[in-house]
Image (cartoon, rainbow, N blue to C red; front, side, top):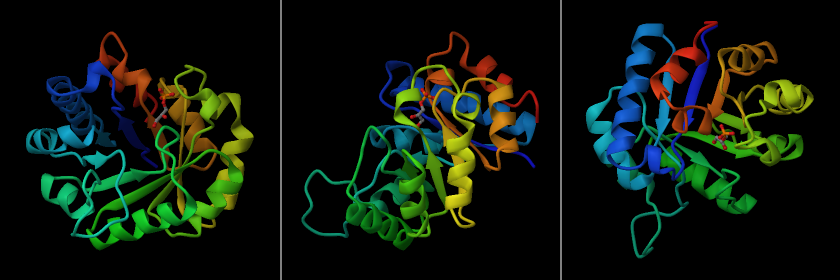
Length: 217
Ligand code: G3P
């Protein structure tokens, strides 16, 4: 099985604005050469220009569970879809929501035909998130985010526990993923792929880092 690789651009300088377009273009090239699906997740302000430049799926980092109307400062799923987004993260560790808000965001995304990845921090929240029927749940222990220590090696039990708790909903794992062997380990633990950020966005040569991720595919 070929893994799904989701690259969260966060708010790093290296993946903002023109750099977001450059990074997405590199991901698109590696996706085409390897046959692996790569999803890029730039900031909301960069979605339109990134989606104009690449054919790979572009997801948002967050949406709000709102509809058209008076919601100043919120992120409307329909606006993201029109800007070119094809999906969204919900409840990332750096953008936590209450359960009711996660549910509303998931339903609002579906209304706008956006795929959803609900992020979770432990097995119990994975179970709750899976019950909302997103397209994916992602398990990311917060203490390993940005650490360079891959969850697939440091805490394989949380990954297998999440796969069991997800009741058939597809699972991604993230935190500290940076190498092809981390991706391979994630697949062996029963996930569909990985969600990662700094291993690519902060790499000296992001395209080489992306090629490394698919080395064992
Ligand atoms: O969304 C992915 C993320 O939180 C993991 O970050 O830098 O450990 O790959 P990183």
